[in-house]
Image 1: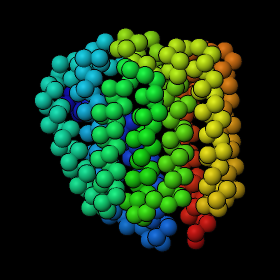
Image 2 (image 1 turned 45 degrees about the horizontal axis):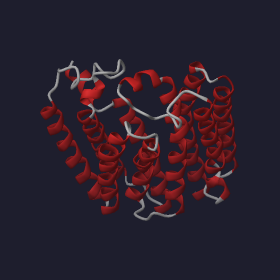
Image 3 (image 1 turned 90 degrees about the horizontal axis):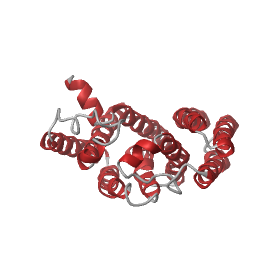
Length: 287
């Protein structure tokens, strides 16, 4: 039960996805240097896990009263009363400090970016969710920082590759989050969250979602355009992007929750597939 509550507190599956993204980018950055330091890779994974867990912990502390109102979140340890706010705060602070120290040991840029990510996620995105759909844009910034942090942890320079990695994950988050918001809109409204572009499940929100999926296609082709990836990466990115766009079009066409679910599940596959292909193709080009 203790592990189950801890995994809910830190949003374990989300934390793993973030760490996966950062670890892939670290390997890409390492290949730029021509050497992979596996010890530093493990430090990045540990530090990234702790920092992300801390951000999620602070998020749940701030939203504990709102989490009680939603079916999806009412069984989390703090709103359910199985853990106090003080206990959560102590764990969050410990994980945040320990994770920042680990990332800071890799280099200061990675450490600073991790602190910025936690602050923006917990204290800007979190309260903004009840005020404006702009929260999705604000949240997309810390959401896209993991690949940037992973890259600069290995190659301490924010260059074109770093910005491309950031850009792909930044744009991906809009169809991803809006699909989730469409599926969970009834639950979100119980807590007063406003995450759909128009605030409702309607044509306007579907158009924004479709447009973001459309924009993702040329953004995902940037590695190939700039020569950091070959035709394999370009082909896989294009096929994945068109499939993703198809799901977004289905939502645009029928405005139904099942279509939003397909888009949401598709987003979970899209990002790791494209990032892994970027890594494999990039390694092949620099050999």
